Length: 327
Ligand SMILES: [Zn+2]
Image (cartoon, rainbow, N blue to C red):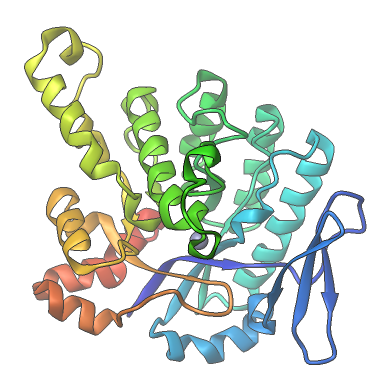
């Protein structure tokens, strides 16, 4: 069995509240998502129709998906009331998908991180709806995940035994990406990997993982540059007494508590991730919201990596099940 840990879903419609997205459904069965009155992106019906999507799963080579909101729908710039209504709508949408098709889907919802108190209370709703956890962005409107103000959210997720997918989003350093051609999509192509690295480093050095080592967190896109950039922190931690006293365990040890999808973009990167973090922390991702972004099939990837039978079991579904808390 192959479980897709990283893929997205959009609601068929949104509540008619100003500032929230609008789905304009077209005669061909597709829909345009309008954000702020402008077309953001077009979607096939498999982006919201869970039954139709099941027919598409064999085409992308997975058996079961962990659906989370399209990351652009984690709208932390909205005021608390609108943000809360949007998160609740996403959670109820994904809750219905999971309830109607438990053989094919697990679900991750959303919380309004712009208001930590509301985010904490929405987690109970997430739990009641039968979701496995929530997806959050790599930064909260520019603020680090390790900022103490967000700690009540992480504590409540741990208390409720909910998993967290940390998804890269619009980088906070867009000005540094301005040399890349527009066609590259530098936000994602360059920025996402750095965002994941910064978010992971914040979770570690901000003390979230030291306080909550049993909290299950998955970093999107193979954790980006996180595992490479931690090598220097790890050296400093082990060789400088003053730094070694800052955390109970070494940064790399905390990084090994995190889960990662396999969207590392080439086999040597993925080989490094598995060697450094262990196959039991890495699972499959497609980033599907109507189409997979994978450039290699799971079988070909496993062959190229030379994974053992046990490692294949872990990356195929074992890691995802542990991340979700269902193993
Ligand atoms: Zn994604």
